[in-house]
Length: 288
Image (cartoon, rainbow, N blue to C red; front, side):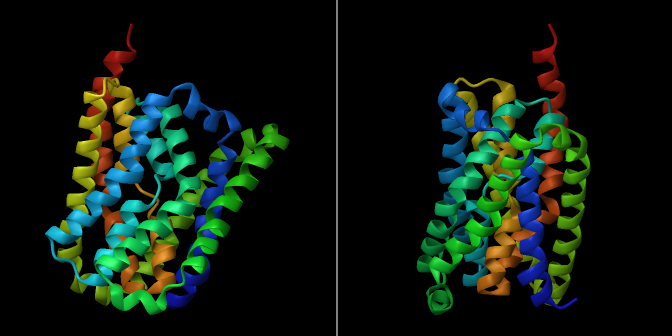
């Protein structure tokens, strides 16, 4: 499979499918929760939309990444949480409603935040990429592959709740399998470049991952949130929608997509380890 097919056609379709499945799990109430329980949502989204991108800038600077890789790492850091974060929050016995709400709101906010931080990263690290980036096209791309399928999924859930109840588990598993297969194909198409720079990118990406989860957990605790809420926020910061970062990055330069691909190789290991630790701790909270 040629890289252009994997990254320009199949990967956007995969991302749209994942966002559609996410929409099947959402209702308007998930967005209203922002106003009903504002403190946890505000702290979580503040970490996700501000702290994570800033940490990505810092990690790129600290490890001296090449311009395209630095831009790619910031793009990954600015991407919203992913549906896998919701699953890991559930396994860790964290507050799933908070996790789902953060994923939903940050996915919608990505229409603004992804182009914003992408532009800032290009200004800081990759001015040579300016000629290749058309921000209106990036905004349109993000809208078409995230907001539209998300809205369609929510509409289907509202109109056909019984059908969604029957097919949701299979649809979620199918979309995740599709994601894995297409990401593998995308990575394979750039295998030589990824392997040549794996050590450089992996250290920076791992630093971002660990710092984001650790800092967000600490901030949540200092703000007086419970362990279950802190767990949900940490998972959102650790498990990003790497598919979105790969899709947007590939539309500009294949090298920009590599940090997200490398990050996705190990983020489930670190987040899974945290989930195992917090599951025991949170179980005590849930036990009367």
